[in-house]
Image (cartoon, rainbow, N blue to C red; front, side, top):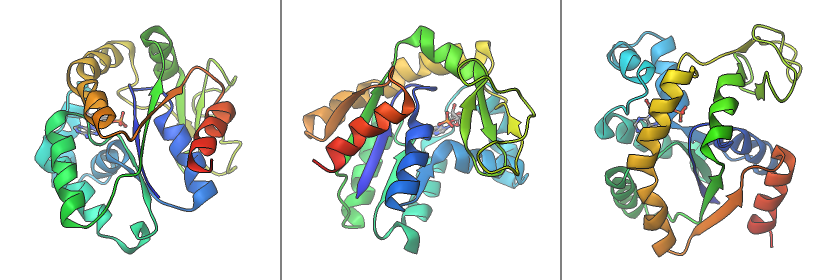
Length: 215
Ligand code: AMP
């Protein structure tokens, strides 16, 4: 089962990916997470991309393609995977097509999680992520506080992402509308696009997705 999540920052791609990982036992390939890992590990690549990510701009197509290609070649992707945050522009979508052809893979589902911009800004500002299990929660909607203990794994601490501040979020939303939104058409033409109402509760969105995956 090869799945792609598409949608603006804060639409719930990460949350839904985590639910699918648990349910279907397939890995998530999140380019944002892969890039943040590089920054946290202070690799050469991490140092190179730190400022780009803080400013809300895109990292180069070449860098993200390399990361995705490496991940797709790993054994845990054999039974399927979830792509989250890649592709993000037409050039990346075309590169992914080529990569899938080369690896004899088929993209089966593209879920577009649709949420109005004003809600996205609040969701990103309030977003908190567990530094241990990756659980995503929110200080506005779930009554959680930054730096409190994660109630999901009881080990990690809930932290804010550096790029989840109002100024950077607005830039990321602009970049999304300019560069990422055109790939909705790209996948619609291939008849694999499923539009999902992202304003519902995470559990309801997950049920909508499950109904499509298991009709
Ligand atoms: P995300 O966690 O998906 O919100 O991504 C966080 C940041 O990582 C983005 O704002 C970009 O700076 C960078 N990034 C993630 N995925 C990509 C991609 N496919 N292409 C370029 N930059 C990316």
